[in-house]
Length: 140
Ligand code: CDP
Ligand code: MG
Image 1: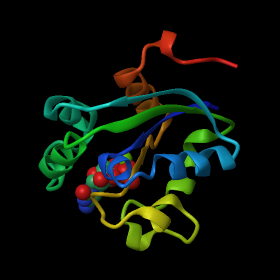
Image 2 (image 1 turned 30 degrees about the vertical axis):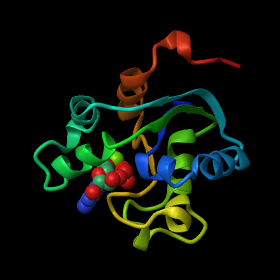
Image 3 (image 1 turned 180 degrees about the horizontal axis):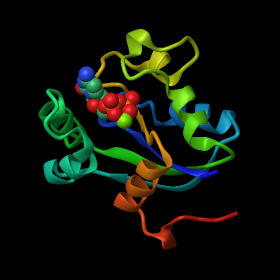
Image 4 (image 1 turned 180 degrees about the vertical axis):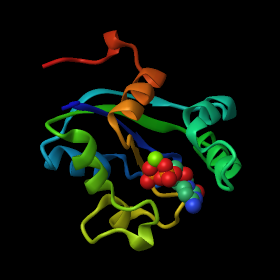
């Protein structure tokens, strides 16, 4: 079982001062932060990150959004953390997200939905290595 995933507090979450609230939720679930930094992606970096969505109708807009301001990127660790963190985030569209999820509580919009989380072991590996070298990830 892969025990690491990539989480992002997106530019809307940072500008709305939700960094602490999101981190509280993760730590409250027993998830450990193994690496963390603030970055501001260029449009090209955002396009590379969301390459799986190239050609979809929301690709241009979401990559504009992701490069519109700083993000907090984190490597999360814990048992079954990919699925657990996805459940904690809630559905992509906050209007469809379950009560108690981060997106239900904080997000306003299908695009500006506060958080990102990897959706599989393969994407977690790609996404973690997109932002972090192994040396930047703390073990325990
Ligand atoms: O983030 P998640 O894995 O839940 O959703 P996704 O389908 O992988 O889409 C990536 C991101 O693109 C979403 O989190 C939204 O910010 C954005 N998106 C959008 O703007 N409109 C959609 N219909 C679907 C996704
Ligand atoms: Mg996704």
